Length: 371
Image (cartoon, one colour):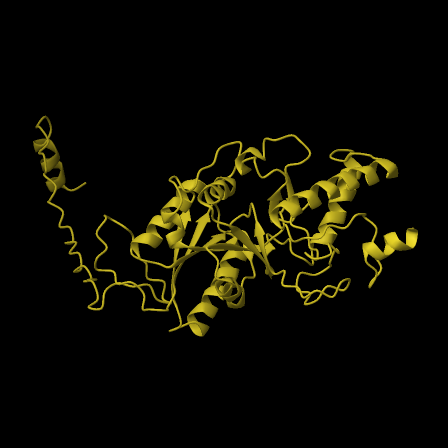
């Protein structure tokens, strides 16, 4: 150690250490950029194929002009609980078709309601549609895939207040979701908690003239009696809203709340009763075949057989009946269904037996032959 260092060390012994103040930090200035000026266009806000939708922040929507005469303004409303790759891919394909094929023909926007109770989300969708002066709402579920613009046009061409495409339930036994009531005096919201045998039945594919069962909804003529057929648009008492086109002015005829649900019934049942109460008929377009979470006309038979085998292996969910009991059960259900069909379609001529009738031979001629 040098002598100079020793002297400094001796001089500092016993003295209080000097306090040094840290220099003030020089922070960079955060200058925010100027906010974009997004004012109201001169021609008024309107929905177009770019999906522009204005959210209602009050009751004043005078600056929004109604659609031109004869042109539709459709709001696609989706209540989303969880995003899936299949839905996003399907919706983007559908939206691409809308933007390329329908540009200039109609005004279309969309509004997603994320993770809200279904009835609250659907009420919000109606309010957004009313505020933007839409003519129709296209309700969609987040588990409906492979929709096309042609499906939308089929619903538009039907010209109904409320009409939906056809889908199957996504769980076993994958029932057809187009129902009528056995007893028209009962409310639809009472059906889920009703334990009786006769609640709802699937709309049958049959000739309204002779009652002959058909395999397809697009038959032009009945193969039994030769009567002309137009069965694609069917009146129903209950339909879900997986891909449903609804006129906005319909909600002016319905009492509020338009949608409601509880642990005993879903929102679809509530809306069905509201429509029945207002004298509005719901319809299902059997030509719009929907893919409900992978269940469609192609996959349903295989999934049904798989569900039967799984239930057989587990021993749950199956009721074992003899052939005689099964025939009685089918006869009672068929008779009750035909009775209900007669009430909603008085012009139907009911068949007297379950056996298929020979082509060209009427029931009267068979009775004469038996005599």
